[in-house]
Image 1: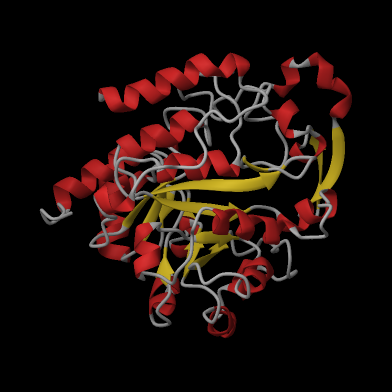
Image 2 (image 1 turned 45 degrees about the horizontal axis):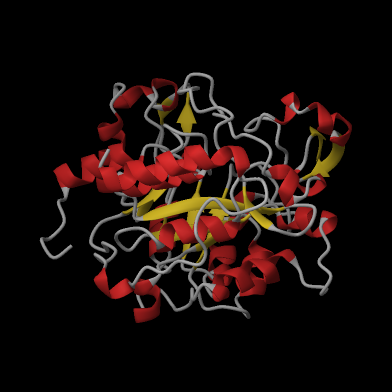
Length: 372
């Protein structure tokens, strides 16, 4: 790790103990666009899924800093809200699996049962904690087979802190924030000005200068995709910003949280014809593109071709190096999986937990022109 990356990580670790009431990262960014190496646009985008979460607890500052060091084009995050309406970076609406909340006896009475996407869920929820309380929790690694040494050492970060990390990167790094569980958040969090979650989300981006259509001058200065599984949220914000939007797609049997349609309906020609007015791409679960049977890939669907015929990009999720996530035909070789998806399926971006692995594969197979 280079010194310029080691130092921020060291400072972050030293600041954890007294960071409950203040940002871990300087706000706002003071970096200048003109002095930075631009975003590469000649090969599929390397999207750091929750940061380099194969190495650090997901959606923490060190995970994002490591992803930038390893070559990510975009750092991705899920945006939720605290009880007091602060937007935060956290994947799950509950805190149980990726924080040490269960070790905090002062919060034992916060356990609740809520309906989330049609299913009753019991646990500790972000919407029942203020930002100050959330900052006392330590993030932990989701998967037990990954490195556990950083558990409890880094706090949840805010949307603002996440943006600052991208803007202060030594080269142009895009952000890829998700409007996460908007139905649930709008039910549980109320802002004094009467605004919705989506309004607050877009207002934060505007505060930091994010704007512009795909590949415009403004967009290239501060690249961004806004993503969501909730099509109605993307349609709603289309009246607020021209930032490119991506509709996420889950297993075809699952109901969307906002439309009561299955993702089989969402991926129909009729629906793609409708949603292409509002989005620049789709972000499908990769098994929706190529179904799997007994851990073996079957015949690919025509989803990528149908999306491309409508000028929609395709950014599938999630690529993970561990053998339990690699299908049999890839012979425990992550490079083989990347090669299949980029060169045979023809995707335009990949969400990966291992940014460095994808970057190294792309540098070997499709090195950037010297000016990039």
